[in-house]
Image (cartoon, rainbow, N blue to C red; front, side, top):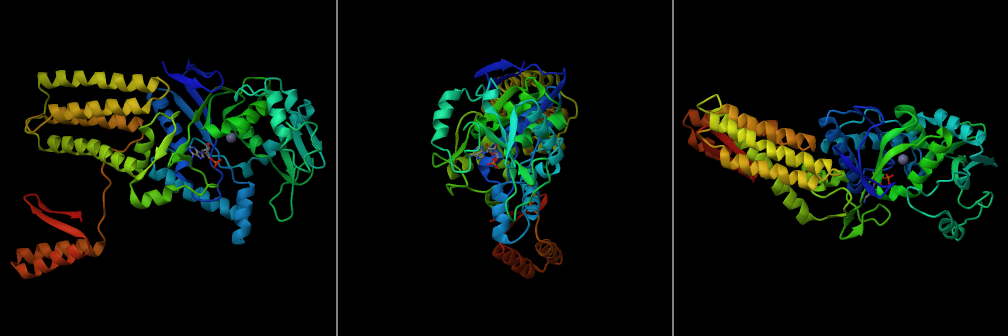
Length: 469
Ligand code: AMP
Ligand code: ZN
């Protein structure tokens, strides 16, 4: 049984889906006005892993994650560059998808775009007005927060405390609200901004309504899991609940999951503080598998501090798994015997205990840190039991087991292939030919030339091998 820590109840609860064998899951996606930073990558990696584990357990997962492609920050960036907001969001959605691929994040079942769902937003806002949960003033539509009785249930906030805090934040122009707690569903257009026609005048939707609408459209009125970073609990998710539940009269999401923040030098990493790395920057130095592995080494509800040392140790740890897989493949390829001995069959049976440990860790609110520890136990076991005399079937079975556990975590066990520039490959071939023709002077010359390019050649019994200096 999978147990999930639910922000609503502040407890771990048994996971029971609305519909047997199916999971409907919505994760708030990024606002696309720049390359994503590694903080944004955390929820992507975390919830992709949740999805993979659910699939491993046999669930059919409908996973929806949006791109917020209309927002003040996008408009600001567009104005700075003198291009349209659409051009900015399209560009960074494409870049985000490249980064996701690098981190081995599966594409969602649907990636809706806010700008393509405006009709649905107008429908939901109209329904909320009809039910008395929203009102329009001078082209702006507000949600009547106090009308929704359980407001504050997710963030465990008390309405009166909120009111006290909000009053001091009242800004001019907002006093048209009936109550300082009311939030915006639709705002009127400003000069030079994208807008859509609505019953309340030209304008654009507020951020919170997007997710309520896209979630309903692609997953239905009720979903199993809603996820995002912990900064979204209030007000974003609280407002999503108010909108969706006021509209449908049903519980919106059964389970609410929130990942803790990725920090840098023990401070919150954010664009506004300027202390962030983009995923793209990290990819220049590391294979993004290492970033994924680094993130999964912590529990998703624990704050995680990013540092070069931790990335280095993640790199080494991941290499230990990859090397074990490489060795097992080598053993399988060169094995003298094919079939498993009865002793080997017994060893394979024993490895089931590592799979049990892995599942137990993941069942316990997706404890990926302990799940990775189980993978390492299996790697250690494989390194001890498999060797030159092993059968092909045995080495292959061990290799498959390691790979299938890593696959659930979305970790690729193959070392990244490095491709040589065509001219370097040409030089290696030319050197082989020179050696064959006993032109050793030319062969040495080429070896030195390659060395200058940072390529070290090694002549082995199996042929020429190369590595980067
Ligand atoms: P945004 O583009 O700011 O809406 O953020 C997209 C997602 O990234 C949200 O789920 C945020 O909660 C999450 N997020 C932003 N910064 C961080 C961070 N430093 N650590 C973890 N998650 C973050
Ligand atoms: Zn959202």
